[in-house]
Amino acid sequence: MRRTPAAIAAAALLVTCTALPAQAFEATPESRTEARTLTAADSQMLAQRPLVEAADRLAAVAESPSLQGYAGITLAEDAVVLWWKGTPPLQIKQAVTSERAPVRIAKAVHSKADLDRAARSIATWQQQNPDHGIDAIKNPGDGSGLVLGVRPSQRTAQALGSTLQRRTGVPVRVVAEEPLQPASRDDDWSPWIGGARLWNQSAGAICTTGFGVKDGQGRPYILTAGHCGQPGQQFADGRGEYIGNMGAKNGDHDVALIPTNAVDFQAYVGNSTDNLIENVPFWGHVYVGQFLCQSGQTSAGVVGGPVCNIKVLFFYNDREDLVEGEQMNGQPAARGGDSGGPVYSRGSAGLIANGTVTRTAGARIGFQDFATANRDFGISIP
Image (tube, rainbow, N blue to C red):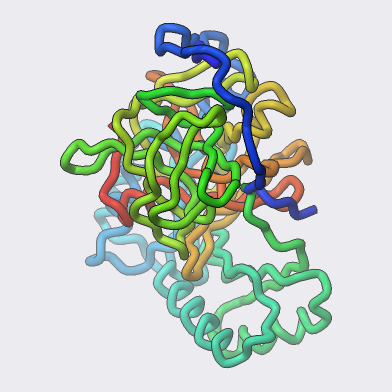
């Protein structure tokens, strides 16, 4: 199959198989088609770019270890909201007034450092109470407290919240919800790109390539979900063309690298056969309130393109360090085989790599942000 460029009920996102069809013809990079038409989701993400770029600049100042009180940054419909506990220092006030994008400072009850300490205390409590029933510890980004996701069968949710609130000294809200479950384009070719079908030939499982990336020495890799395989297992595209064997992996963060011969900084954005691609010139951070798309290969075949209008809701304050979002129209956010696929936003020069798909439950999605993979492996785009 050839490329063409274009201008959470819980379900497993990794699927297994016993065999895939042989490659029908030789594919060449010239057959990729670049996407050109902007969708409503593209326009929505482009409209957010001034806010996201302002948030990046503010975060660079607010996260300085020398400053105390930072709680988080969220994106409202019309402004960046910088949450601060106590009186913001002069550096913060200067950073806010220097922004052209609308920014407002909001009062936070707790700082991010407060909530980080509380989350570590809850993690210790979890180790001491193995039947705790907690699936995730979440930070809504506004300093209001922590949110615990527990299974709907957990009958002691209210008591659990009270117990942990007394233990940590911060508000703990308990939400009964289905846990996110692992979510694991047919014929790609070298140089490899994101959004293609990824076949673990050693385990018989199907995932999606996330992004082509390179390390500090310029060595090429495919970034994907860690649960798609184990180091040393062999991966190919959907028709069996060899990509590489899995290398470095961070199981807690669910990210892994597949060393390969060459990559392009592009990703599929069409259906499973039209080979529409977009350039991915760089990666970016994500914020609560930001809108994103995901382009897993299974969803592309079902809906005819990426799943968009995914709004970031939480950052996990636990060892997994995931990001949780929700498809705001109530549609499935991801499907079996989407694991490892690209999560992205749009900028003026193309797509912005924001993460890779990990889990889903109905309209909810869990993904690992690219910033975490960057810290884990020292990889980047370009």
